[in-house]
Amino acid sequence: MRIAKDIIGPNGEAAFRKGQVIDEGVLETLRGLDLARVPVEGDKSAVSEEALLTRIESYVSDFFQYVDPDSEAFIELYRLVAERVWDAVGRGWDIPCRSERTARNVEHMRDLFFKGNASVEDLVRHETSLASFPGIYVRLKKVLDSPTSSAADVAKVVTADPGVSSKLLTLVNSPFFGLAGKVDSVSHAVSLVGLREVATIALGISTIDYFKDIPKELVDLCQFWRHSLSCAVFAKLIAKAVGVSSDRLFTAGLLHDCGRLIMYKNLPYASVQSLIHARGDSVPLVEAEREVLGFDHQEVASLLLEQWGFPDDLKVIISNHHNPERAADSKEAAIVQLADNMANAAAISSENMFVLPGMSDAAWSALGFPKEKFVELLGEHDRDIDDITKVFV
Image 1: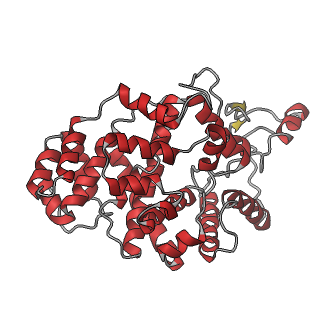
Image 2: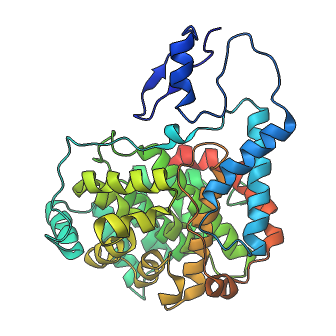
Image 3: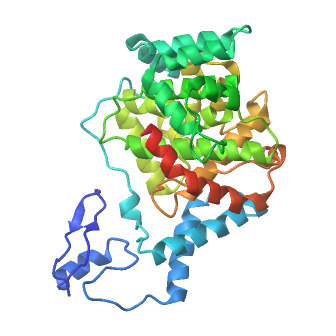
């Protein structure tokens, strides 16, 4: 017998290549790799339905360890995710084993400081002293801060930056926004979507360009932004479902993890230790950050957005999306918290590596989201996320 596809080992590299003959020595090694099954060339025998269901239940349960097991909402979300994994396996997707979900170490990278030697304030101060924001960010912020700004002011600033205006127009012309007819100018977009929402989305787009020099071996930026966009899509959909204005929630979802990028950039080794802990021990990444670093990405984002002079309403949502009860408007922060959970849940059947952080009873109660909407929102998300990701990544 020969192995039908590469098998990844604990270090993230191929332990065995496709075509490897399976002898007694290979078989002994395979037994220690925590594999659900070994793909064998020419093996067409189907795994029994019962065995597959057991494997799926074990795999999905790993991601739901930190949610309330008695929550009817998360019980429903678990059921839907298990169905999605079943469908994905039916299409040929292989459930990854634990070794494939382990982060790689980066011992060659050096951190700005060691735990206890400096503070989160020092981290943010160092970052903001090194780089300046794109000019369009400054101009957009001035427009947002002025009570006398007009639609023409917003359109003028956004149109002056071809990259931002192109992405904005592609986004508002997507089915996700559901606008009738083609939107061919920023002025037209402002008239249909609204001054503040267009300005806020443009602000988010301009911010993305700031985070381009993150080491590739540390984090897959395409995957990072896909998760962020997934959260943004869910945030806008959830806001609509609970009757909250969504003008800033797409951008809040888009930038909810921006603090992590500052941590990856300046504390690469410690950040990877957090990733290893989160993936290896199946704990929420935010909890792993607190244990390894002594602070989390929310705290970094809060100080970073303060330094940047970000709009207060957005800053409060982003800085409290794991603790909505601390926010002045707990409902908006809870929307992003649920969106983050749903973005992680939606990717369990494809690329997700992190357990759901969960929600408190208080946050769920403040939200007032009907669990029956999960199916509808997952469908809308799946319809639009690929096209929206292409706009940004």
